[in-house]
Length: 274
Image 1 (cartoon, rainbow, N blue to C red):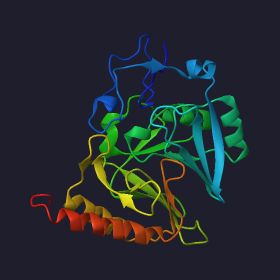
Image 2 (cartoon, helix red, strand yellow):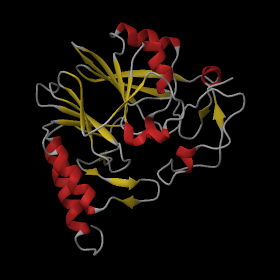
Image 3 (cartoon, rainbow, N blue to C red):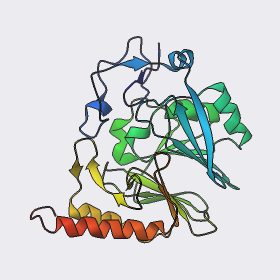
Image 4 (spheres, one colour):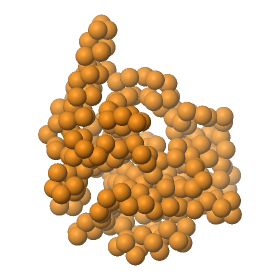
């Protein structure tokens, strides 16, 4: 019995003797850009192939964990370190002894929270290794491919994980799509960890809002207004996306607001986009 991992999207599945016949995450129109049919690996096969994880500090208390060479959707996980405990935001597919020991030296993981199904990855593997609960929004329950008692489904619009650490459901890309607001970071100005629920545009201080990045399907204006208004209640100086070098390090809350306004101004020229 193996916990098979999809080579394309990095999702780990419940144990079975044979690989799954298909990957619902990949077959969905919001799935990865390149999909040529099901292909599978395991953690042991990844170890033998020479995969390893790197850990990089982005600012005090915030570290990125990524797989090398690039794997799956190529997202990183982010480790938030606070006096009350550490939170792993989003997840990656690979975990080895070196990563486990390095994270333990940093204080371990007291909670795991994930923005949306594309980054569920090997979340249960991480939860078991660090004895940490996983917090997922219940609206995305159907996308859990490895059910486990460590998974805690939350409901509603917000969830406070620890003092100053709050999950906010924004929806959009997925119904349960969430972001993490870290109130005390950036010298008290706040940091937003957004996955790609709010997507940082490469090489410029702007963000985007999409239903499907793969097929280029935008969100309707009503959804963008709701996201704008919901996140507008929070202040944050910086925003970190699911990928390195896609970050806004200054005045990020204003950038999100102005990007939403620009998005809406364009949609207003096209009847029926509300």
